[in-house]
Length: 403
Image (cartoon, rainbow, N blue to C red; front, side, top):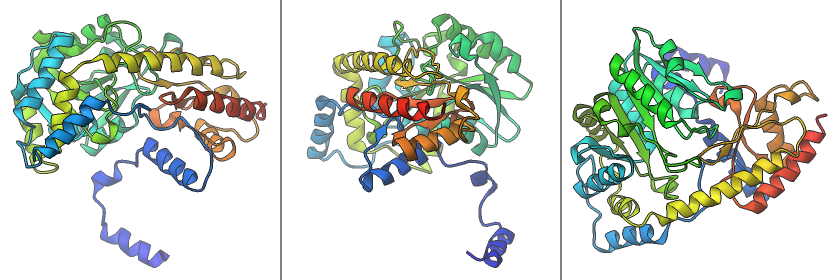
């Protein structure tokens, strides 16, 4: 494009302010580059995408096939068929003691869309949203797209990235409209204690602030029973629970998620959804019923495998001098600190190290800058033991060359 054409496009202001407030997802960009390299025949040790390595369980796939065979392929209510909403609220009540009605649930095309829609209906220009750091890559951009301002609360690595009510309260201003919590955390794997969750839920309720609870990894808690803020039913007026079947049931490509919350908020999300995606794919709704209503043995089996893989990659990282790493208590990520290598042989940032790891060692990871920190790399260990071993060996050689 010539400079003259670029100037004309700029003068006409083709793009909206809101699209210029966001950036492309860093994890999706890494995934795209990794796919490009794979297509050229490069053998990658891929720790980039946050995606289970398991196949979707058979009973879930069978439910989708049966729905198609029964011609359950027409439009449904925007918020989902009553059966899927009932199944979701029943699963949540059984596991967490929550008390949502089907009318307080909307089924969405993925947990990310549920979060995006909730943010759009609640956040306006000038509103502040408290966001713990490190954060999942999309939070900041979704807040900014809605016109809100992220207010960062920085968790301390030496305290295993713990977030407390006192830290949140210190960030509250008259402009605070919402808080986002994600536990277990992507990227750090940190898990909030039941006491910390309850304290923040009650703080938000007392202050009249909406608390968005991203429970994408809630069942991948390695420290004990899963914890949901939805358990505190006397505070549900200010709670929006955002759930996903992607990680729990290895259904990432199915795009199945939901929001639970007060009826007026759920109605507003449904209204927005009616003018965008409408209902989620009908066969996927039936598959989701099978996922949340059927045997949960598959969830326990996957979690056990993740713990084994976590311990394997942590043991490997310990063999690389200069790298330190907290022990993740959930999800399927490690978030090692690589700042000791900054300044060595042109390794000046996590982003630059991640780029060189990909280009030179053929190891895929995501730099910490995407998650709000500058010292870390995120590795997804939702992969095979062989890939972990191969990746660790390549990293050991790579980082030894930076000394």
